[in-house]
Length: 310
Image (cartoon, rainbow, N blue to C red):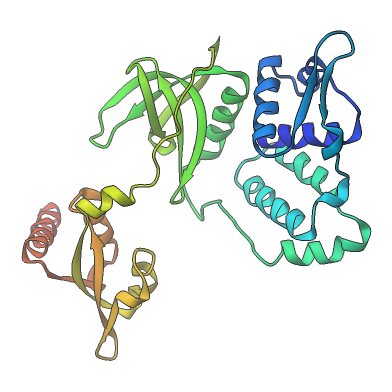
């Protein structure tokens, strides 16, 4: 995994005077081009690495920036351990486990207790209670394909259930709102696409490699768009579903209505996703206004009831 590899590169450069690109490529079983990209990323992160060409050349951290293990504060190490621990619970494999072990090697004995306490103050568990059994093995396949620049083939179902066969170049895994996606260049659509992992079947990593192309990260912040399409509706809910509703709006949106109910100003977009959210609250939620949303809820309820009449 890229994060693990770059952390290991930094540690090697801290321990050694100079390391060649080929030596790093052989150690991490990647191409020299990948190593050069990692070095560029580390430089942009603020750790200046100097390269020397020719016989005996390689990479080294600039002498006036040379640091030792004390460069990491207890807060720094706690944050790194927390991030690696939360990911290792969701994405299996030796890379994250090894990275976590390496970070622990930075911990001075006199700070070990303090760092352990700090790293245990917050627990992040990204694994679902229940879910699609294919997600975790698919994540491993996607991760391996990104590591080796291998094409992925799969069948993909859109929101209308239409299934197509795709081949794509994988570039980035994305965890958004508890759902996994990956950004790739689709050879069928001739453009970048954001694929949702649960909509994929028959995922396979191909033997064929690809040359990485320049790409932009997918847009994941839709605040500006939401301002133009999002409306506020009024719900009356029972306190039995209060925790569920709080996943979508703040407590400031709640007004008590008797002993057991609340009136809630609820953010809403008129699409299937948001209607399904309202139905997830079941009989404990009533849409009061606007009238056309209330009427649409009634129509959908009647359609559901009609399924069971016979």
